[in-house]
Amino acid sequence: MGKQEFKPGNMLYPLPAVMISCQLMGDTFEGAKPELLGKPNIITAAWAGTVCTNPPMLSVSLRPSRYSYHIIEASGEFVVNLTTKKLARATDYCGVRSGREHDKFAELGLTPLPSKHIKAPGIAESPVNIECRVNRILPLGSHSMFLADVAGVTVDERYLRENGKFDLGAAGLLAYSHGEYFLLGEKLGTFGYSVAKRKHPKRKNQS
Image 1 (tube, rainbow, N blue to C red):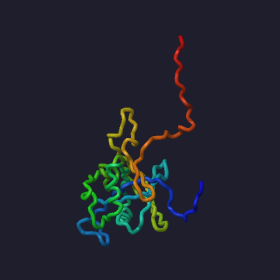
Image 2: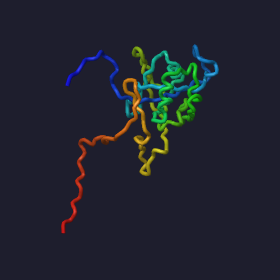
Image 3: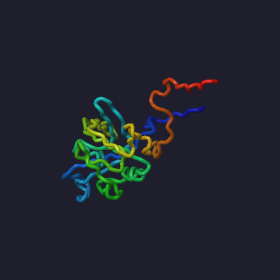
Image 4: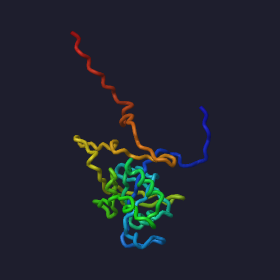
């Protein structure tokens, strides 16, 4: 089996395709339509990930040229909204249209979900809304990384089972890989299954 060398680049795939909602009341940004100032906005990002368990932290990397970058920089908060098959078109749209010119919530028929710990709203149609406060911003080059503390999490009750477990796999989550969106599918195992002791079936008593 042959291998070919590529130039250094971002080839760590697949990644979560998330919609990040943000809002800054009463501020102005160059080039933004006056009627859109102060309204909540959504940006799609794939450069997002877990940073720390305790305290809970995550990261999102954005280009400084993006409209949402300055909203998050000024407000110090945002919501990470997980995406699903039903949100696939909205996920793509929010990544290719600017909040300077478009009211994405209104155009896509999405519902702002009031957050419990921050002012920025989440997206009601998302199965998981992660409320975040910016801890620090790290300029890295083409992107800056927003390291954020998780202030709260809201989940859709439709995926809560009787035992209290949250069945996120049933939500039909999206993944992003090299310019394409994919639906997460077959479950192959659970954490630690490779070393778990196998349960042997009970033998029936022979008469």
